[in-house]
Length: 422
Image (cartoon, rainbow, N blue to C red; front, side, top):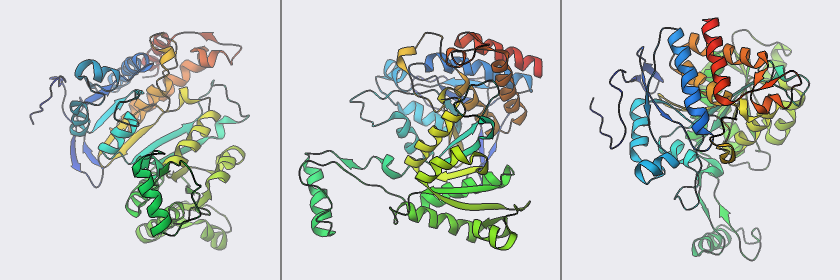
């Protein structure tokens, strides 16, 4: 296949990942896949190349090789193309199917509410997946952080993040207000005076494909439960519908592989089956308590965009903060790995920040490629480096036995551990 890009160089020493079955999320992954990478803005210039080096070491140690293809967005996009999100970048991620990016900053007046959201929506990365687990040696504000082992599936394209909103004082918002009050009968709902109005779309299609992916993950990874998190007690026709559609998916598509929490207690006296996943639901504000007070009861969470952002960040705090919190975005036969944290521009170029979140996001990408040995090696090596006590400032300041080192030196240590463990 011929690829036409203005300023992206396609590696000649790699092989493209091919799609076998998009609907089944099945790929043909060569031993030397071409993988687009966006280093990112702010601290992305530090953690992007650092993670790349660690992932190279893990791939090489397990008989693989990544052919990296540098693509550009954010500041690097403006430098190369005078655009924040060039077509080259979008097309490359679309055509090569598996990619990784660092954090991006969206400048004021960029034409996007968020570059990160724009990428997800343009390429239909509908599932933002955030595995939250504790690494030995990382300080935590809770007494038993090891109980946290939760994978969040957050719907990525709908909800209030869809960006359907109108600014107070505009003609458009007054048209919407008039429609809501006069045509829909909510004449006493909106206060007088300036008001901003947004729309919260939650669709059956978007909800079901997200929940389906969460259930499939739970079955494939021997997880006990999938919890639907919503605020359906108040928002009955959006968040309530999300939960209803989730139960429909479980009942209509999975048969005996999925049982409800009611069935678990009414027919099995609470005994977890070995061959089935339990599906249950929790109200969002209660779930924020539950992940603190009953942490180990939850395995997989499926929720909407805003809830998922809040709750997964709260979970990240329990394992030591966003510096160690990985993530990835998935569509049909495609993956874009990215850390949960932002670009933190005040630390850019200082060789200071923790690259763990970016490295572990790369680990998710390796798993998606089917390179489980390399992925396991990355996690074990990162944990070994943290346990050694030679760590970045965010961990060192909360440990009495630690020595502070920089981003690149931390990565050097991880690479050494990969070589020792391989």
